[in-house]
Image (cartoon, rainbow, N blue to C red; front, side, top):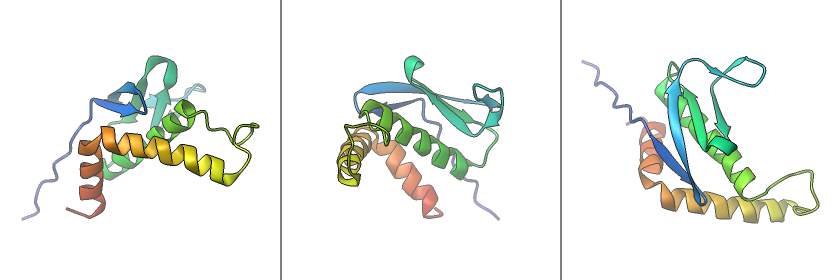
Length: 118
């Protein structure tokens, strides 16, 4: 008999210094009204995730949006004068990811559990 997978829904995630609400819904629509897997809206401190996707894809999409949030919060842009080298981007991204891991241990543990097939 197959074991039922536990699917944890995260209601809030902290990105650097801001708390984002996480909402699971279907569909998630972008600005062009096209269905997408997830999106972050910085001004509303909101991350929307498509509830109809497979659980592992939900976690992956949520983490993808977190990386967008880190880029925004750490002012990382590949087109500006602030981040002139790959090293500058890596330093800022490292700081953002370290903050996220420290502030969201439940998400990290769940993501690792699912990635490891448990």
